[in-house]
Length: 300
Image (cartoon, rainbow, N blue to C red; front, top):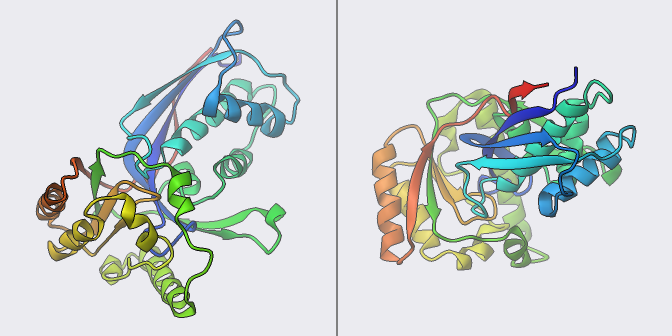
């Protein structure tokens, strides 16, 4: 019997990790839950939910099953427009929920869902880790955009913590991307590539100590920092308190420190620096999520 109700849990994610613009991402133990209930008389969804549902029925379901009415409820702890992948949790929750509701009539593979999710998001660095869990390295599969993306995913050990300053400040990805230059100096591109490779190697080998000093970026952070009061001082305070490194999470406004310890000292240092710049904020101390998206409950 086909399900008429499904609950999907999706983890938050942090992307870029400093120099890994649009290619590095990591899932976090902070979640949103999407409940999809089939309701034939429901109004057609709008906004991001409506866009995702339309794409699902026309692409993933390959028009083998027509659109039907449903209600969607999004709940959870992930702050909106803070660089923690909240849009991915909405899109992925809807895609997984609809796929579960139609799977007896139209089996939709996980690969199809992930491909569609990346297309809707426009880049893979939040989508892949939220879907698969763990740390992910993503790249174009070839020089042809139609070939999509390739990715490598590895689990993250629990000794690594992510101290996250969450400002009372929303930032849109579009605004943050609008500040980026069309060109950067060649030596800056080389330095970013070097650090990007070393970050990937550190996560893939579990040698987290080698992350120290590797989160310096020349591609996006120098241009986006004008959006967040105290940006440089907050990141510097985290490093001075013992963090392996610190960076802007996604397009912001969250600022994140990676550490093997000293979480209390790092939290206090980041909050103190934010306060000096009159930036209201809180702190979350998070671990990596290695499970990715999960179906929590379903019912006929």
